[in-house]
Amino acid sequence: MPPRADLRLALISDLNAGYGSTSYTAEVDRAIALIPSLRPDLVLCAGDMVAGQKTSLTTTQLTAMWAAFERRILSPLRRAGLPFAPTVGNHDALASRAGGSYLFECERQEAARFWRRRQSSRWPLLRGRQRLSVLLFHSAGRPVPAGLGRLLGAGAVLAGAEALRQLMERHDVAAYISGHQHAYYPARLGQLDLFNLGATGSGPRPLLQGGCRPLPDPHRARPRLEHRAHHRHHHQPANDATGGT
Image 1 (cartoon, rainbow, N blue to C red):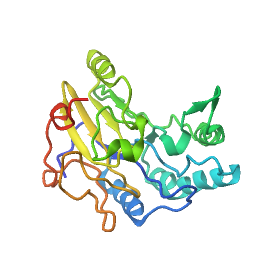
Image 2: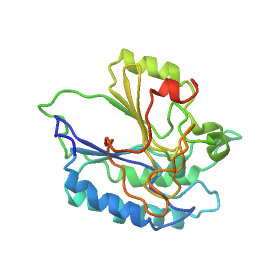
Image 3: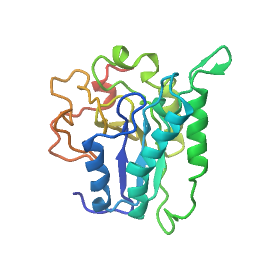
């Protein structure tokens, strides 16, 4: 583990299993059990905490999914005294619209109800510490895994990513943290640190232009909560490795 600095963040993403599932994989359980030993100041989750994005899911099913998330993910972290800050993903509260209405309005309402009841100001996170700005999104600004369009569709990469990057640099944002693509890839782009997080849950994918098997392996996965020097992928600057999108 690297030496402790002023602020330590634990980063996780894409925890969900199949549509409507109220269970989580053993890899997710191991990751949540590991996090307290890292002694982070804050746990950030880049979305896909539950297994929605299916219009046939009932309110009862949606409530059960969020209850399972609280039981398996949120409560263990809070018992350890760790603050948890998420952004929502497409499987939590997708914003797609048709005919002037949200396609997944019930999922959006259930996610809003869950988090409104659990907002907390108990943790003075940065009191007495240097200010640090990070941006937490579900979608990344650059493509990372192979076959991205086929796997995830048109919304896989954030629209207007270059304009957003310039805006972040003007306002001294230190890092852009994202998930969704199920491929772990830390990089540097301009003045920004980029952290595209792998899937803690099911479905890791191989890197763009890479011949390595995805990490973690889908059958023998281990949680990837930080960038370590022995990681088997060869990292390049994001504007070189991704085809310059």
